[in-house]
Image (tube, rainbow over all chains, first blue to last red):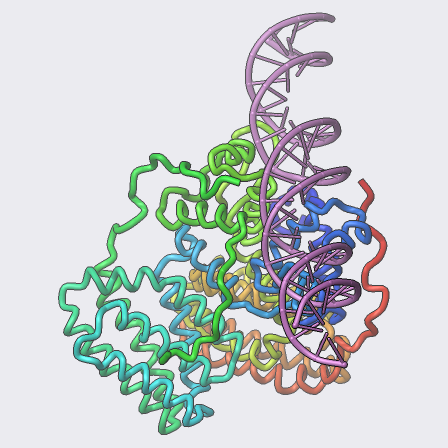
Length: 263
Length: 263
DNA sequence: GCCCATTGCTTGGTCAGACCAAACAAGAAA
DNA sequence: TTTCTTGTTTGGTCTGACCAAGCAATGGGC
């Protein structure tokens, strides 16, 4: 045993995992593409020889991953269709794991710094006028004298997303969006608890404008550096000091109650 | 309507989504932590007033996201337990979406460059002797004169993962692992189709050693630059030229057949 | 002949109830 | 005391049923 690998418990494959594997095969082999329709659930039951429940559990997983989109009816849009909406599933996954403290805030900041530095460099190289206009619009919203913290947070997010999209890299964009959304609530909390909100707001405005300008003149090196600094500085100055020992310490009582709905 | 947002179809919440939302609430509020057990499925049925199928579909999604781990029986390990295994779910999600060509190879390379550059910098700052030893072991395997392409690919992956882990950032590590695993098959294909395999192998060996040495001496700047260059160069020299018009063009026939198992 | 309401089929959404097998605990037998 | 048996809890799976959303074909009314 040269490998230090743990004795992985034998993978008791459950039925839905087998179904999942079948569908994955088709996708990985390129036989199922975006827009293709899967056979109806009842037909898959016969084809794969498993119960509808197993089929449905597999489809649910794919749906949560943004790979599938299901609609009832008989139209051309009905049934289970292969889709491509990674960000929602990514966001959900990252948000839960961040909440479970698998991913400390420090780590999230590091990841954002790496990803968004890359985005900014790409954006500086290939942002179009339209891209720059969208960024400028976000800046304008954040520059409004009476901007609320919620509005600021929203347009802050959009600004960073706009940069990622201008870079033209879909994977980096989706990862950026997912990570940013996953910490959206955390950042908003930080904004609210902040004592010197107006000072910090002005500082963020200045940094955002500098980033925009660097991208506008196509200075990739500078744009990347500014974004990286922007993210790290904000975390260092604000999140870390404001967010100490916040949530998670709530009482563990009455966790399960009030059904979401009665059939 | 200042927003260019598409008319999002009304979110017809399905039952399992409501169940999912309930559980998420508890996690986001910190009331459910890693190691906690959910009530048994049959109990959740009564508590939430929905069918067991709906409960199970929600649990399936969480399980696929690496948030849950289910075991039968009555022991202390049984039932549905909140877990923390993000990489598997992340890998699965990214692999499918990469296969669906939502994420072109070029984009994946860019993401890897950004993430692994960050990893390498962190590793240079804080790698322990044990970390360096693990990397060296991977290098030794790849340096073996009779190493197969499969072995090389495997230890190549491990080497990059070891760097990420040495950096101590779990989010970046998991993203790195997920992305690397998602393209594992692609890279292996590239290795096999390569004409001047031995030359490329030697080049990779040299680059790997240089990266290891830079991390060993704590030169973060150099380590990050080398890794980024390493990834970009390999893609530029090899993957792009070798992998033109490969998979995905298979015939669409006999897609559904041979049940995985009959009950 | 054209338009529109009706009818029926397909499809996912949901539920109820049943049985199986794994895993453990408690008691009975050696 | 040790070992075997039995029972209970829990997830895993299947069957069969019904509902509602859409669409398509039908057919009557204009």
